[in-house]
Length: 168
Image (tube, helix red, strand yellow):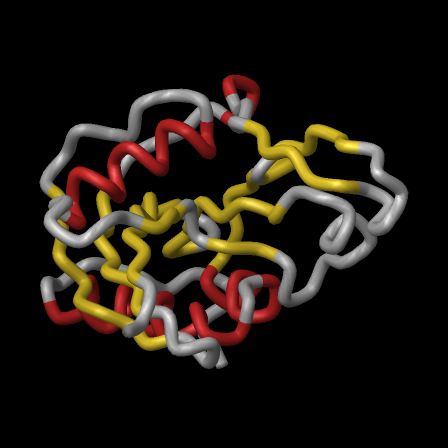
């Protein structure tokens, strides 16, 4: 059975850059020296019976260190990842002060086989980026989420342009 995650994609419409999204760089030693394809939309797994929307809000707060914006939340649908995991995605327009960023942590043996347990942030930084930049930074399976957000907002009449028009 596929694992399920829930994600909350926070976005805003910037006068100069158009649609920008909040993404987070994955923490831990595996991702430390990587940039492209090492970012994610704030998300996390949830158990059967748990509401996906509630999980997305909880995971945002755990990974970003503060509550998400409280504007109207858009349901973006489910996105199957190359690993088989299914991400249920929600989007919300709002702001996030990057200076308030702080992530929860996890423990793992590092270096592998050393017997030493170290603590690492789940995500180690966050940034507002254009959708074109997000398409380069996000793990490949999450790029369609950005494309869906652009399409959804454009259908609703939002000016999603800017100096970087193309996602792909």
